[in-house]
Length: 375
Image 1 (tube, rainbow, N blue to C red):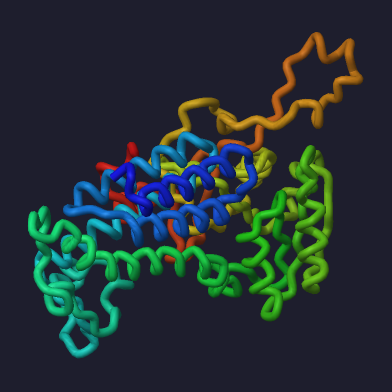
Image 2: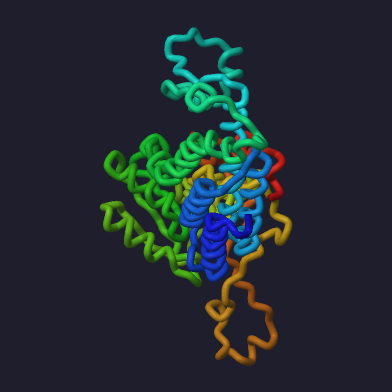
């Protein structure tokens, strides 16, 4: 298999993405997830395998390589776990020979609802199984080793396309109910520039008149870009320094934050300053709402620091090296992300509905298989 041209091409594709991740040429949760899906789709379309265990091990080895290249981008591992979940799901459906058909004419009952699984899987249009369209699945066929892969690949491509479509439409699906969460004359606080929060706020603008207060998020000052974007969309926007968050919190109706990763206990990694905003909101009993796609659900815990992720930026942007006398006497920490505890969060708005932090573990159990928590 080492001499197989398709295997060499797959290795080259994986190594290219790993190199880009390592050099931070691909950044951002959604961008890294999209790149990971595209690589996995290309690998699965060309790889040779004769049983499901071989395919799973190939995907897991790719996942390990990509995660090791950039362990701070949690969505890489999440995407690999999601694809593995879909692969097993399609394999079990094919091996059992049960067709998935539309249930619009069936009588609904609690028993059928439980057996059918998630509601979004009930309204799938007419879809035949592999057994009907390509013949029976034959693993480890000595006469035709590629028969298993040739039979299974078409539905695997469909499953991966579903994951890709979910990522491409995640902003629209999160924002579709924005007007139900934002009310007229509200004052909303956000921090930094989150593409998900930005799309959410813009989606409500045609229906509600409200004010957004944006903290400038030093030392990156990404809040400046957020304020400019919201203002250009016709939203009343006020840019304030981070030090004003607590003083303004008594006037705030809602705090809206983005997330870098949602952890298994319902906490999250979010841009620096989110912990400050969430703690001030708790002191004033102001609700904290997090907008994030379900691809950010991570079956991991915060084991590094009680205040942040193990990801730090250049400290010179906080305290310049020209302050020589002071630099020698202090340790300067500039974390990329804060760790926000679950008790500081009221709700997660995702592309599959709204959920409290206590439901995150259940969502992770539904999205990933237990054996994939450690790739």
